[in-house]
Amino acid sequence: MPPCSPWYKLLILTTGSTEATGECINLALTRTSSEFDNRLVAESTLTHQDLRTPLLRRSFRKPYPVAVRGEGVYVWDADGKRYLDFSGSAAVNFIGHGVREIADAMLEQARQLEFVHTSQFTTPVAEEFAAELLHFAGEHFRGGAVYFTCGGSESIETALKLARQYQVEIGQPKRYQVVSRNQSYHGSTLGALSVSGNRKRREIYLPMVREFAHVGIPYCYRCDFDCTDGCRNCGQQYAAELERAIEATKGEAAAFIFEPMSGATLGAVPPPPGYLQSIAEICGRHRVLLIADEVMTGMGRTGRNFAVDHWQVAPDILVTAKGLSSGYAPLGAAIVSKRVVDAIATGSGAFLHGFTYNAHPVSVAVGRAVLGRVQSLDLVGAADSNIVGTAGSALKTALESLRDLDVVGDVRGLGLLWGVEFVRDKKTKQPFPPERNFVGLVGQAALLRGLLVYPMQGCVDGVAGDHLLIAPPAVITAEQIGDSVDQLRAAIIESA
Ligand SMILES: Cc1ncc(COP(=O)(O)O)c(C=O)c1O
Image (cartoon, rainbow, N blue to C red; front, side, top):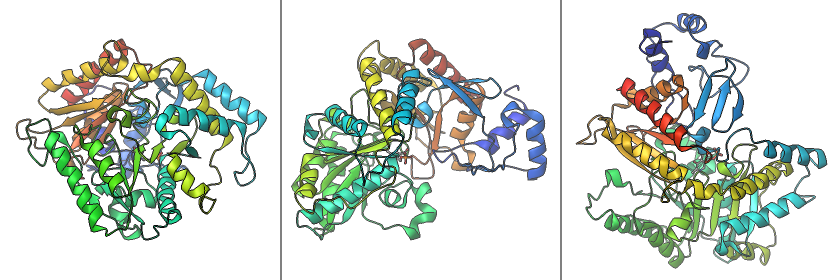
């Protein structure tokens, strides 16, 4: 289908995905839905499907390609079309698709023992993987413990409850509030949503969630403090805001939760210098637990085992998922420091929490095999964007080259996690009107060119602001990065 055909424009306008929910925000349909459906059947391999099927998909308005196979950095659809996975799905895949040894590990575990309930048994595979993961998380977690779940949101719920129980165990039952940041994303369950700051994803559920204080989040491209010292000062201003918020709880704050590098909502924004160290110091002084949400940034994605390692910050609880299994099985983890584990072990003696599928043997077998591969191929090293010759540095250089485009306002990130922010006016940084869904257009244009990216809106104020997240598997080559950025450039130009 020629990219400039009217049909193509219609498809774009009606399918622009804006964020991880994949939901359309711009429904510029002028036809009736039945007319539209007929055209879908007639026109494109992408759209040879009903929009309503027995599967409750993320959107009823957009057609989805049907994925059938993956290998390395590529995914194929049922029509044989190949896509380069330039966003690791949603910053999930780190080791590449279709790795046989991971499938073998799954099969072996499923044959040996598919499941037992954690109230009745522990398993060798869960015990061994917990020990390996603690080691991977570093010295600070020595003597700690790992709680395995089925993903990011469950792990965040686990961390919130751990923080509360810790405070009760040490004789601080008044402490229950969890302070978090605006423009953050911690998951879709109601507890995780309550500490998230992503306006669009929270809006309709607000009557159902418990609200605690949200504080400002450093965003150097649009710094509130208009500072000129590389945001050193503004980092301290934001840290001071956190301290004021903790003080305002009058001794009721149990924890502070943050993404060391802002993931989905802001689009791969690294923290300003000194900021994370200051918030860690403030939380320590106020006896507020520090929960680092590394669901997206953990397991090597930023070129360190965990992103907090860039800034030598030691959280009390570290949450991870996505890269933990690279998507081969549902898996998340709360990695818990000794201090928190000790409080429960020597206190009441039981963590009041549980999921049927926590520490699922097949999932943890996958996690073990994935970690083994990450280490044997040194994929954390490959992700390091500060070392010349790595995939991380090739990605950084290639994406930086997009800055010459009129609509590219900012390119930021670290390792293999990058954000490209689009603006209508580069000088004033004015965003596109949200209803234009500019990033959705870019995402669809890229998709049609066989390139998967992760488009989102709302980085400016929760509604306006268009950005793409780029997070390829660490096995991507410099050549594949170059080709992908060429395609992305063409998709951006086509959409502008
Ligand atoms: C930082 C962060 N926390 C939590 C989550 C929720 O994870 P999940 O979708 O696996 O529940 C996400 C998902 O994108 C995330 O990026």
